[in-house]
Amino acid sequence: MLLQVLGISERTLQRKHVVSARLSPAVSDRLSRIDRIYALAVEVFGESEKAAQWLKRPSRALGKELPLRLLDTDAGTQQVERELHAIQHGFVY
Image (tube, rainbow, N blue to C red; front, top):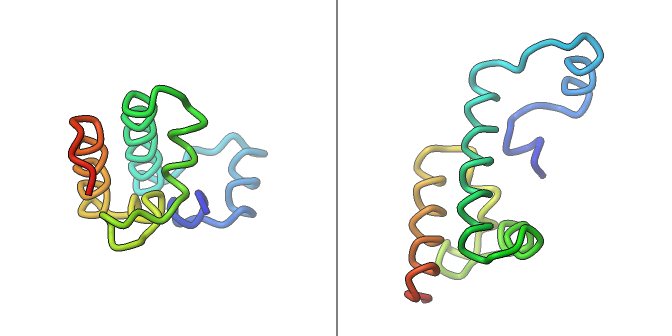
């Protein structure tokens, strides 16, 4: 699922790893976005495992989408970030 969000295939990732090539700017941006949201989720839930689980479960507040799948766009990332802040401040829908 992470590779889908990043927009690259497993084979491409393997090839880049073998030759120590850099990821494209778009893929690097998506990876940075995922890292930022994951860090926020860990802060909100207090544990990396709980954060990872939340990112992979459908969220009613996000239209029953998986938060991780929304991280491929800026708009989706903002939705996930708002939901995490709402949870952090006790505004669960």
